[in-house]
Amino acid sequence: IRVLKNPTGNDIGTRYELGHELGRGEFGVTHLCTDILTGELFACKSISKKKLRTAVDVEDISREVEIMKHMPKHPNIVCLKDTYEDDDTVHIVMELCAGGELFDRIVARGHYTERAAAAVIRTIVKVVQTCHKHGVMHRDLQTENFLFGDKKETAPLKAIDFGLSVFFRPGEHYKPLLVLALGSRNSFANYFCFDSKKLIQNLTFSFIGERFTEIVGSPYYMAPEVLKRNYGPEVDVWSAGVILYILLCGVPPFWAGLQAVSPFKRTFENSFVQKFND
Figure 1 (cartoon, rainbow, N blue to C red):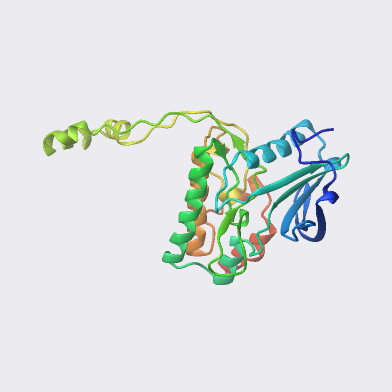
Figure 2 (figure 1 turned 90 degrees about the vertical axis):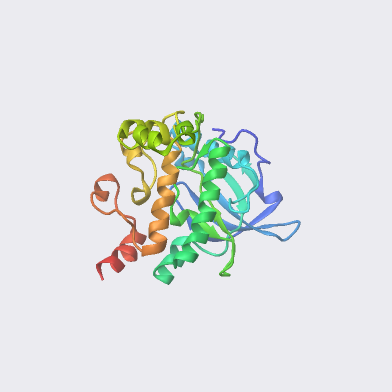
């Protein structure tokens, strides 16, 4: 099977040397890799084709790469370097983020101060804004999917893992009706304050675009609309809000019923859940 549309080549060994393992996921293993020509270090996610059992699996990997190619260069989004595909494996060479997960820094600190949390969430919101501006819904924003560039406290935070991301067709936004605000205060109050339906209709922004029904993501960060199988890019904003809560409090905001959606993640059991119980 062929997975990638236009890979850089078919033999990663002509340009990169794979090193020790950095991590592993459902389909692939990530290794440290070195550019043979420049000595520069990168991360390489290697995906065995044997694990791509269905056409959907193949499509997911192909889409992940296409989305990474589509995204503009951004200081807070991991950069795709090269892609290779041979008969057995797909290799995705990316920028190396050696500073560890945002999750781990939260666990180490217990929680962030409001000022520190504000700086982090500002970065995350900028990432969400960039994704949506370019027609991409991430769908898996979580503390484990933000890595620091290096070990320094001032290291840049970068979004990774577009494996569940999708392209979407945006709708149109309209500005709220504020014409009456130019008139007397009484007329404005009479129109809005005593009719909640008018208030909702005229003072909120409307987003009507492509809707999705597939349940994906991580339970702790999953918006209710995902479970209702009717959602759009607004679910990324919900996930960002959950991250902000965790930054400030050190624990997730929602617990009940999560096991019915998906098994608890071991990392949460050993850290957040234990901390909460203590």
